Length: 220
Image (cartoon, rainbow, N blue to C red; front, side):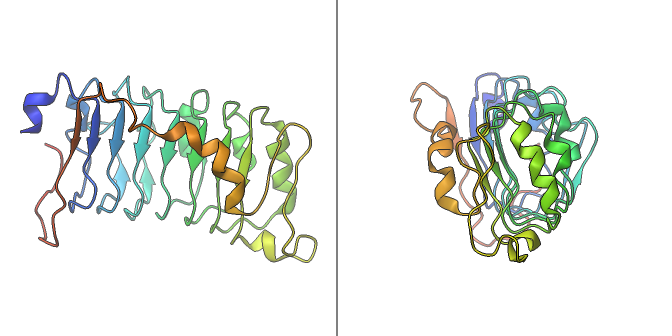
């Protein structure tokens, strides 16, 4: 019973459980890592989901069909690592509430077209944007204004097929050691995302649903 662990739980993995919502996650006030990959969560709500989790530093919602991030959905989360790869997100602006804390932002294989709005994200060291719809090369100049940025992935975007880039890597100025369009650039920046190496965490990994429809509708 998850409710019995609500006052102590720090790590929760509910991947591949046919979840339709994160409603009820707010009860886990000490949660620092939440992984809910491979579910059916199409929105992050401003109430009842994760907005009030003041210890949450890592959130992963890969492959959920996520389209909506409500204003305030992450308002009190001190997120340092956010992975929303393989969803249907079309803008970065909904994440501005975590601009002062997030260091690793993964938004590969979404529908993002513009990246000028990353300018306030001064703590970013890793930005993964491969497989989106980014076409304006001039917008990549914004990346040079991020002082801690170490790696960016852009492969699979329209701007990478333009004649001025071709198959060559993208390099920024000295503000970033590596700004490239290949996955090798992210190896070093990824190292700090391992949240599984602290044995003191109270961890729970929910058993997968094994194809049983409706086995878990939410976290309530």
